[in-house]
Image (spheres, rainbow, N blue to C red):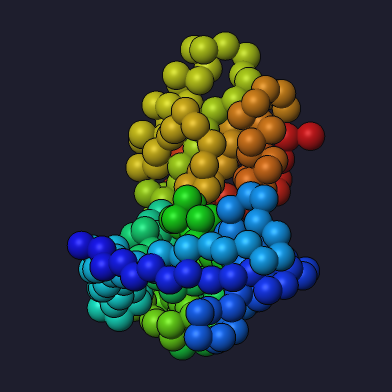
Length: 262
């Protein structure tokens, strides 16, 4: 519903986009000249209608109230959730820690930090929420053989600092080859690869067709192919098939350095 009042004015002056309007009782008001009808000059008489639109007022109140409720829901009721981590692949000297997608609500991620046995590590961690929720894991190395560790993650946000649950891992002994995961590259023949897969099964290890952070060794006769290039990017040792045979013959993990593929 709109309530309208009409008033009559005489144009007294036009200057710099403003018009000086004079009422019948000699009240002077300033009015934007752009809102006046075309052709208005000094001395012109104009009628101006001023109305109140209660319907528009109510719509604006409703929109403002909805905006307040949305702000309350986004910033007042939802808080960032603490990270949830779990142990991934573990070997004699490293482990992979995985986490659920991070939920920061409306907060911003400032940084992630990895703690080992209560001490903050100089470990490279994702620097943005997008990266963190893309990789969902980190590999930490340099661990002692057959040793127990406790890990947790610190998440700093614009809404405060949260710590994940703590997880305990134990690195494998040299005789425990269950953490060994190999990927095969260019070899003499497919038959050789199949024989190596049999060896992997006999020693209790595993193999995969795709290079990832869980792969411990890349086994090949020739340094060629996309798999080899991926292994180099992941800093995975590229070894000769003799390394697998040595692990089986000795019944424990063998140093890769003696079997590096030149």
